[in-house]
View (spheres, rainbow, N blue to C red):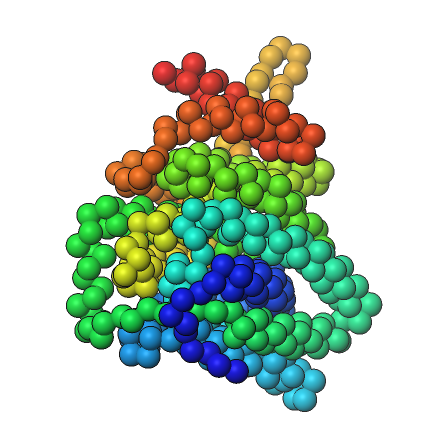
Length: 487
């Protein structure tokens, strides 16, 4: 297959390429679902992982972004982003098939000492491919369609994630309950399917056209100084780094907390994940439309405080002796997390693309990924260490009312183990949000104005957006109560 870029792309070629990008997203999402999230955590726990090892596994996907310097060098050297993306994605996905065959060919051999290096190589090759892919997409997708296109693509990917995750969770729980000796082989089969799906996705990328761009050959380290000398982009880097550190010190341990502290079955955990995904699917297109119409910064300013509320709410999970209130709270948290994350993640990607000059897109985006990767990788490692430190420690707050005839005690909150991480992450998130105000984006609109417009839009489409409308109204009421009480 000819992987050379073209001088000029027709409108038909662009549209055909965008369809292939969507298909690649679906196959890549299947690969990620089969090898990530709660499933890789459950597999690691089955292999005897401790908190630090769980933190390391959570850190790997972002840790390897520090090696995107290789992608910059390759793109500048060969001026062929499609070939680099396809080749590196093949290198990333083929080992998944091989590691998945180990439990079948060599039963009992698979261990964390083998799994972690393979995951490292998988994520490393994927990071190099991803950096080249970002620059490629920057030139392929019209700028005025970035938010809408990625919103639509993400909606399809998350829909697939919902269906596939539920089927996998039910299947794994069934195997665990009825054929426990085959549990590791089940994870092996998932890795084989993941690698196969990823390879199909690579073939889709191979058929996607690339607009030709001749990039000058410069010293990589000299080039990286360019985005760091851009004051506005530097402020974006500071905010993004602070935000990902706050999020990743806590979020990798949500599933660990539900598995170890609450002893929830995998199907329950995936069920909550699906709630989050459905909430995201129902709102991501709306987020994309408003990001294009107003600004990505405004969307982040709306979503980030909602996510911080979710982190605080995690501190209250497990304080009731009955299970159903805890499950109800978990459901509400996951719905709100899906709603807020849809806007935050979409806008963080788009604002980086928007603020990066077209000629230096790969440099700016790689600098962003490399710097934020450092903080994303350090956060779960720090979280694992802190989780070990807080093991066996707790902070309990009760309220008691006493009278002549009876005494009533109210259990308000109890922090232990991972709960401390959730509180710490929320505090760091508040600090990060204050840094966002310094970032400037063309066309940005005041947050309160966009909230009112979004609420009006949702009300006009209430049947299609019932969940969104409830969330927006709830957020508005909570904000008004907070302002009246404290300001």
